[in-house]
Each structure stands twice: as structure tokens, then as C-alpha cells.
Length: 268
Image (tube, rainbow, N blue to C red; front, side, top):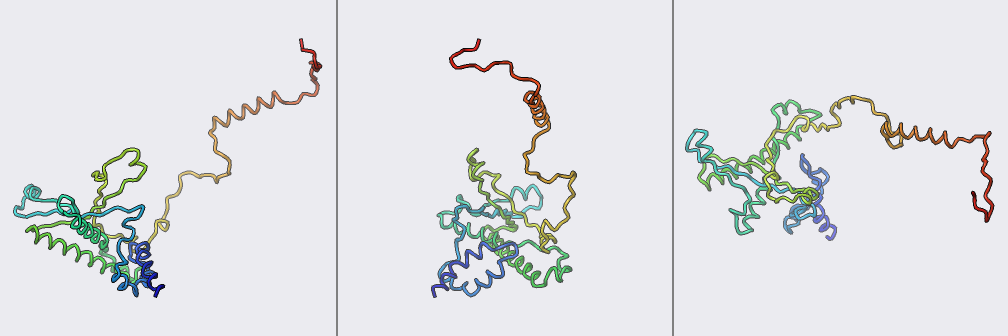
């Protein structure tokens, strides 16, 4: 029982860390499947990496609400209302703000890019049919969640057109922030996450190192272990060595003509 409980404690954060663009790791998913119900019952599968020492960016929803009463472009722009979720201006008390914050994170976590139109033609050894189905199910799940939120907003605001965009709020790095402090809600820290279909290279798992690399324009010699010096410094050093060799070279036919100085006698 103790080992089972410890496994239920370790499995959720392990699943979070091993999550990639294609979902959970198969081995971690196999470990997590018998412990999912137990972890949810004891609320052991929430909050991992949320309050970590180095938290990641947060995500918001930018909602554009349009009544659609006039078909002209200028009238539509005038009738568009933009809202952010979460927002302390609209959601209060804080529990309501946190609820909308979790909804925005839930939508971003469920995001799955759309498949290219020619993906079905690539089914084979490079793209198993099971993987293609998993991609399609993930995309359908995201669209169902987004459509549910759109219908709710249309009903709440009596709107005809509702558009939801995902935003990512970046956290500034420590060094630039220490050198030049900026507000945490500075507009450049908000990045629009566009809904772009996945490329075929990403779908097939092609890594950057597998792609043809450009040839180098010049040949770079292998490192010799010696420090690199510029040419001017090298020439100056060579000249100094030559001058030293000329002044310090031994001369056999010359002897010192200065007699040694005896103790107590000062030289003249």
C-alpha cells in the first residue's frame, strides 16, 4: 500500500515533465493509467510546476466579441469588444479570477495544431494510422473545448461573432530585468499564439540535424591547443625575440675587461 501510494504521488509530476508535443510518454502513461482514479480522488494530480522556483509563462484568452449588426468593416471594428481572461478588472473576488485563469490554461493545454491536408496520404511505416488518429482526436478535442467556450460567450453577451485567441505572458529574464526593470504587464511580454497547422516534417518526426546542412564557406583548421594571436602581435613578438637573440648571443673572442671589485674597495 505504501509503495502504491508513493507511485501515485510520483506519477503525476513525472507525467507532466515527460509530456511532449505528441502527448505523454508511453511508459509513463502505462504507469499512470492504474493510478489515475486514485490520484484524482486524493487530488494528487494538480499544481505540479505551477509554484516551482522557475515557473514558466502563463496563458490568457483574448476574446473579440462582435454584435454583427452592420456588415461594413468600419462598423464591425467599432462594434468589436475585446476582453481578456483572466482579468482583475472583470473577475473578482480572486477565486473567480483563478477560475478563469485555469480555464485559459486548460484551453492552451488542450491545444493541438491542425493536420496538413496531405497527411492521410503519408500513412505507412513513417506515419502509423494510430498516430494519425491520435492527432485527429487531439485536434477535435481542442475544437470542441474552444467551440463550447465560444457558445457560452455568445449566450452571455448576446453576440453573433466571438473569436478566441490564445496569448502567452512571458516572464522577463532576471538579468535584463535587473539591469532595466520593466512592469510585469508590459505589452511586449504578451505574445499571440497563432493557430498554424503542423508541418509535415514535424509530423514525421524529422529532426533539424536530419535535414541537409549548408556547406561551410571556408575551411576552418582543427584546434591545435595554442592560443590564437593576431598577426601584428605575432610579428612584434618575433622581432623582439630576434633582438634578444642578437644581444644575448655568446661571443667567444671577447672577454670582460672590467676587473672584479674587491671587498672594501669602491670602483672608480
